[in-house]
Length: 132
Picture (tube, rainbow, N blue to C red):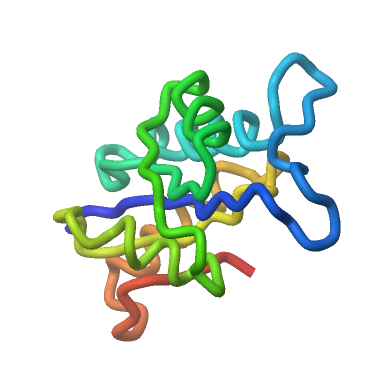
């Protein structure tokens, strides 16, 4: 089995518009979170095969590329991050999708790996999950 970690990234946050592009440490919030996802991929012993940003704005695509992650433009009218992920996941071949919220720059990469392991190890029949 293989896992893709997809980050739904929306520029027009209702509580803090543009928060994913906030930069206080030389990297944006999105870049930090993508870095955590890449760390998880490295630690997963090949289980996580793809890290992808599903974006609604070209500025987010550029931030993802700066972080070394592939990104796809999704339709701007999606009502939720899950909708954005579903669109981005269509061409992928992975068996399981992990939804990593793009505004989680301090998430422990081991928790991302833990979700991937649980979902591929027969923990129910879910094919997509969000860590809570």
